[in-house]
Length: 420
View 1 (cartoon, rainbow, N blue to C red):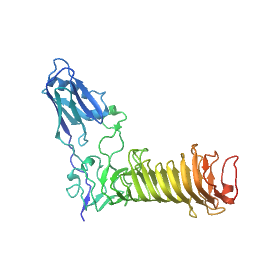
View 2: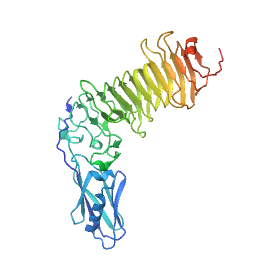
View 3: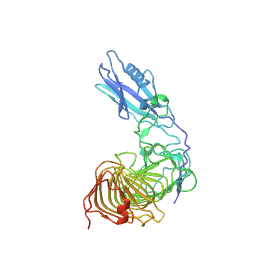
View 4: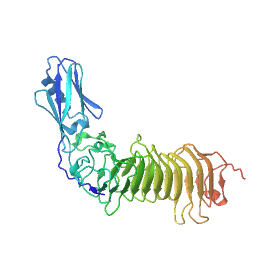
């Protein structure tokens, strides 16, 4: 099998699009250019010609008050009814549409497509001189960010995909484009270009092996079956999203031993389902549209806004704001287990077992959020602790507690006990 390694060194070329004003100009007709759902339009007046309409539209497109998306292009007209949009930064693409009402026309033609060192769809950026395809061992161990042209790739059945710790940049785009062409862009805009690198079903993916600080952003759109191992990552580019974010899968395996990882964690419209997940270190964020059928945690931190059907935790911190089915907590002798219930909802079956007097014991902390919670079946033994001073938890069935756990727990200032 051939290794197709990312080079990221193709020359940057500015995209050029020509807008041609045609048809018969009539007062009141509207000629518009749309980028990212935002439209700049010129309304024809009496006496307008196609060239004058092009000039009027160009003036509006070039105003400093136009939305940020329109400030990433240089707008010019040739005096003959044509408007030209040229990417202000070579290698940064844009997507626009054109429209006109009545008997007028406004036609967009791409004269020069965008390309450059950040384009995944440029064969010159890959060591084999071709875009990665079925059977390739795809390797990213250095080079420039992989940002654009992702929508022109198809999810291929790679033999493997490896992003080593030596790759310290980004693969894909964040939800929000921060801007970068002058202060006029302000807070930027919600990204409209394709954001995720597509990967076929069942492809073995490894992120963070070897030496280096690791990638700061990896957005992957995976096929049905996920097979992802994350050893480490760099610090995320934004506090709003993990360094690695995966969506699209409906089953498979996720193993996290370090770094910052998310399942459908940066956009509530995304979904991801994993059959088996394990966390030994680092952080895993389970987005509201994500599900993990069976999760094992013996270290690190998990933040679950989605659904975890079954959790077995022997170490680490689990922050629950979504849905949790059955959970078993048995700390290792030197382990520390904390489950913080941050929200409402129900835990169907909970079994917390400590190691006895003077030893480590798991804690279910319900003091983080005042919303009502429900424990259907719950057992605390060996000093395992329920911390619910505000009595937010309702017990569907009688809770089982031994003497050590009752002594260690906080069930509120006044409570009732029915002994069995």
